Image (cartoon, rainbow, N blue to C red; front, side, top):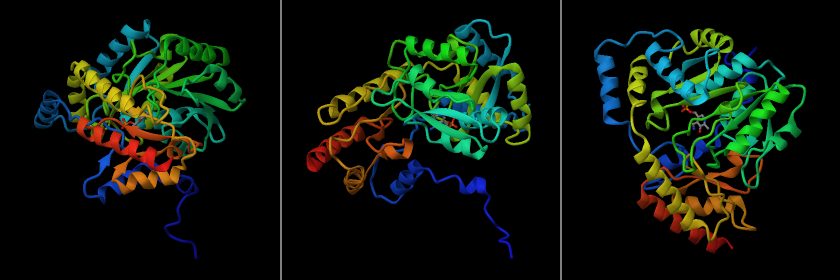
Length: 374
Ligand code: PMP
């Protein structure tokens, strides 16, 4: 007899996230220093919470149009117009987190057997979402300095390549693109006719001169972003995307028959959140980056992050990843092994979105571990 609850090949193709595993391990510890999960350590601003509560009390609890409330979409589009110039042929759409935007992009653009190119190291979801739609994620190497170079990407292009994923500022490395690199990626997209997907969820967490998007230099690019990180609301599932209109209109139908719409009252709250001044958080996180980088740089090789709230230090020479992770767990310090987001196991990911007190303790522990394992 067949198993009535037989699992699909699609689901069997997906492994549990190596990052969640550490999140769950943390729940079983008494007083862990958890630098494993990637979310801001601040809460939603009070006026944004108030906007969500008012929206609920005012009855904004029904479905919205699938593409999102016009007020939010228009505001987002005006921002993109200010950054990218003429955007008449493009449209914005509100999605259920950036994850929702990625899912819609892949569903709308990939057929079984198609290939996408993702950086190595990568944000874990890219690979699994590709598998879910029957596509194949191939990596382009960004070691050792984490620059996504057009030359490295070009080498990996085949006649099946449909999308090139770029993520700046990056999870897990914190690397932020400069203008030359963004221009080269844009030129590659124009020359090959392969679309870039630019995941800009960390755009507000930028410690270089400014956040640079490849979309500034080519229209052959889909931009994904959202409020999960910058408004401290990852649990609210608020994201958006910006892409050519005919493509976005396809995504409307896909969202209509899946997620339906992003949470209605929270769309009104995110609209309010777009007015907030983020600079104080940016400076706070810049200081956290410096605290951790300066604290670890004598014992670990680190590419200093230009954005986001991650660092991807190299393990000290000759130190085995498993022994390193065991030493961290013994101290109730949670970081993510590099192999959870890379084909290599030479690094670890540390999220510095935590109190300075915790970060200082973590720095001390990591220096102690480096001395112990040498
Ligand atoms: N892209 C990147 C690079 C991320 O780090 C994350 C969240 N960790 C997402 C997308 C998903 O974001 P959301 O919570 O808005 O779905």
